Length: 98
Image 1 (cartoon, rainbow, N blue to C red):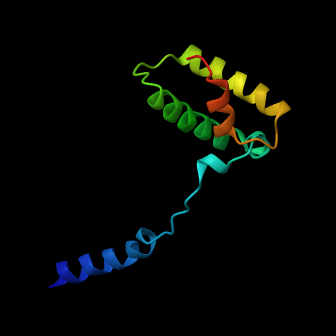
Image 2: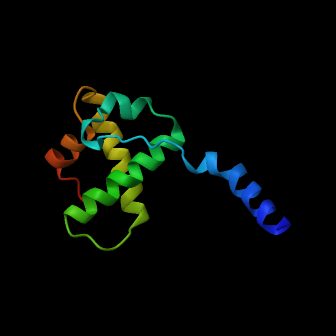
């Protein structure tokens, strides 16, 4: 009985942390201005997600880290001149090379 009570107490302690809210973000609506204003860690995660999405849509199945960094630099440079445009729209319009 003590083990059961202890187990229930442990579950009760951790249960509130299991119910955290999730936030949905429409990645297609992120503007270049918002992208450039992101902190370094958030921008890195966003860039990796966008790169994966774009490469999957175009049938690329390999990972080239040099091309990834070059493409991120190209997108950031494009965004610097097109802050009101969406990052997704820019990727689709530019058809960035791998």
